[in-house]
Length: 122
Image: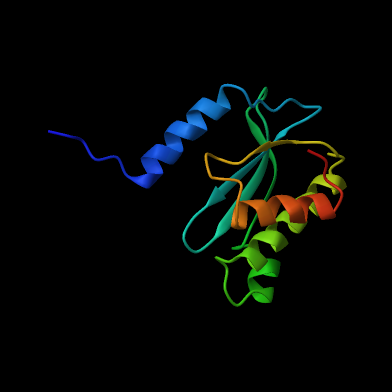
């Protein structure tokens, strides 16, 4: 009998392979992206200490008020801009981009471009 693997399990396998290579340090932390059906989430993580330095999502009060639909490209771009602004306030200029096993396309790409527009380098 063939075991059927769903999309999310395949994404997790890709993410696991990618995480072997992508590692966040205190000088250059990791920008992690999670995409659900209705929302976008981004975190900047220092993997050496295992702490989240900055986070942003479409569920944040200031972003939630601006958005009518939280699961589209426009929302993803605003999350990217928000995470970049918070990171720069904390003194983080450069990050390593971890796309979370997702294809660099659509909402993930918009989030990355929004972060770059605000001055985050990766």
